[in-house]
Image (cartoon, rainbow, N blue to C red; front, side, top):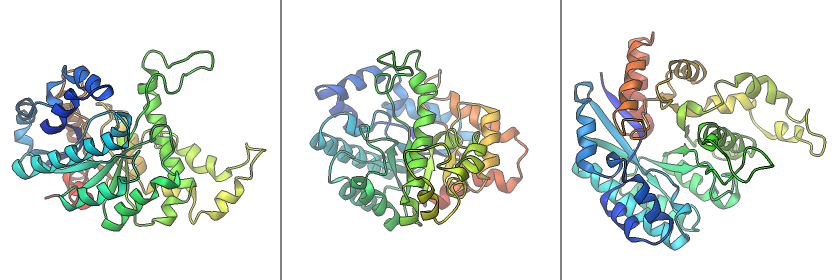
Length: 337
């Protein structure tokens, strides 16, 4: 057996040090994450990974939260993106037995985001990590199309990572922020699902039929709400009187559900067996990739890796399906060895 963990997070030293030196949000994030050494300390990362050496475990690394565009203006985001992508490329080059690839991060608030994507692919990036909104703007905003177009042109996937903070959207109109971390527990799955829907109904996936998109956390809410996504959205417009959404359905080349079935997803569901079963039933073993979301478990590194492996080893899967989920789909989608 082999496990390629396609969604876990790390800050290369060159970027981490720059964040701590900067003013404002980046430095604050760095200070808060010092309590999770596995996300910035290479020795600690290797110590955690060594616990799974018998599983032939390797990683595809990506930056942690928050999005780079939330850390400053376009110039600062561009600097952080370059440092992060160069640092990731260096780690993959120096430790190929640990890190088999990386997801590039982009300065999505900059008009040069697509240019950084091109540069990142030229130094070995296997895919892009993009957050589900760009400082509050939807992903189907036309200014972001060149990024998706660049990914499709190079045959590289886009990995969607949810993004929402407590003050972004309160859960009730009478309040000014989301309480009890509802913004994360329920807000993040909603963010991912909403971003997927915008890519579908905007027609972006018809404009770029070769684009491959992976939705973090096993496609978020979509598998559980298959009935709403399917028969429910087949009736798009029946609940809306101030706009004719039937035009949207006529303009799409496929049924809405068919588009959602074409997303890829990963197994990072924090050790939940029912969620894993639901996601696999919806997407199928050919579109689900092993991922842990390490190091954000209560043990700050190994917990979600161990729990996710345990689930996959005890589910009633064929040997071929298990291989596909654990490493072959990653090899195919990301071009890693």
